[in-house]
Image (cartoon, rainbow, N blue to C red; front, side, top):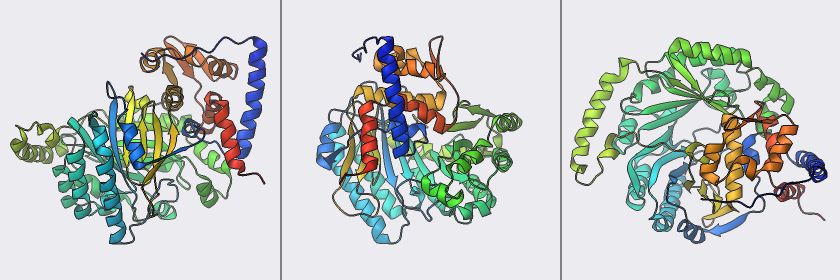
Length: 500
């Protein structure tokens, strides 16, 4: 069981001095940089370390394997267009050479890293981006073959891929099913074509989205999740509710992930005249009235709301499936079962049609220590308690593959868990916290909790702690109290730049 050094009790004067100093420090942080989302605070981890690919591979030999959630992520940095609200590493696939360069670099990383992960069994494979569905079969297939040959996947491991409706067709879906993909997702954001065009998303409209849902397999074979952004410039709460009603009414009954827009500085400049206040006011329209209308809409269409208290993402899931997709699903199941027969002796039956365990990149969702192996430019990797790093060079750049990030301690894992748990659930249960970190939150972070109680952000409840529901930026300001002083001072110095 993990243990931590207890923080000694502070006198009242000691706490008052610390509290005052931290308030001043937080003011300096906010003067140096814009802290607007809880996830930002999770990644305020101090100075970075650089590893060569071989050095990083050696770290994977020390990755914990007992009782862990092991996930493999492949970043495909290509999109047909660059959405103005997206802050992920991506570029247009300008030439076949760019796709080939991505493939060769990825295959080289697999060859280097895989031998050092033999003690791990991966529960999921996720192709994200960017838009992985832009990859032609001649690029995608050798990557899939190399992944299957090089890494150990658990029986029933889930396979997930992000799509673009503009390049989805029945043939591509059949190929993905053949390679074991059962979980599909794509961004809708809004069904208003003029708003998509204003955000450089091309001509995506309601007809294209509905056609894609018609093509994708039904619930007996796989799952489909759609992304909707709330707070998108020019899209009102009434527009969002109208879009949700149309999507819920589709016979496919997709899961809908309702994300709060995290407005970057460039997005605020482009769509809100450079005013963070204007962006916040637009998002603030999604208030309790919207929440009540959303609940009523879900009841009407047989959906339920998960993560109700989250100010980051809520999940809308169908309570039961309609029979319209059962016929095609049964045909697909029969075909997949037939294809699986040759693999019965090799133990690969589950790969053919099992849904498997889900992908996640957060310990707070896995509820157990998490390892994440990221492949491809800008992909994030996490070795629980050892390292968290991003892959370089970025998309379209040259140079040897290397990794830039921080060495992780269990205290940093604890703080990261805390940030996302508060963001997504608004509470922390002592039982879950102790199972992961060996003690209660009050034992691990007494000063932080005392500050939060003074600021009316945290309150003790039976079996743990509850936190005040507030906007993402307000929650981020509260989470600064959990960031070590050295990390905040490093952030200030980094933003100031070198002194003359």
